[in-house]
Length: 240
Image 1: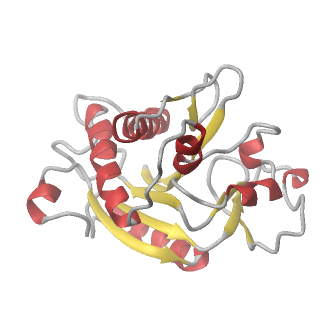
Image 2: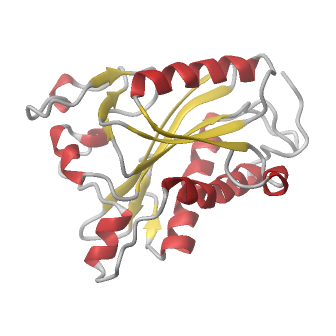
């Protein structure tokens, strides 16, 4: 687990760090955790990890968005929202396994409110911890660096839910190989460049110092929990 016991008690979900994980194995573990959460065997949990290089895509992804180059990266179709994206070392992936039915204030489970909470968490983390001009774009899911002339996507989100328990999640580019995104049309955004914290630091003439991804995950977790609590998840709960 990430952080000490007292810190965990203050959070709305526990945090578990998997390290670098092959995609098929991560998918198996995530599916198992989702079943356990539906059965009440585990509390709300967010798994943080890095993937070995892989391209994933939802069922609605057009074939022309894939295999643009002979990249040799494994490709998987997965049951989540969103189109094609790349995962690899240097990218922090979060898989929240959250029971959205456990919501306070008389508010109903809502996948759109959940998506917006994840966006706010990532935006706040990038602004407060990285001093980057992060924001969202109307009609699109994910997080961008705000630049009217040249918006750059820095985090992607694609989720699913079964009986209101979530799976899949978000991917934040810290210092991955951005060239790998050229193998696909990332998130269906032709010509929309992907970026990373490292790249944005370089563009601003700032020094980037790589840190253990577990430490970055621990910092981000505070923002994710705060955004979930704001929407009524992580307070007093009821089991569905």
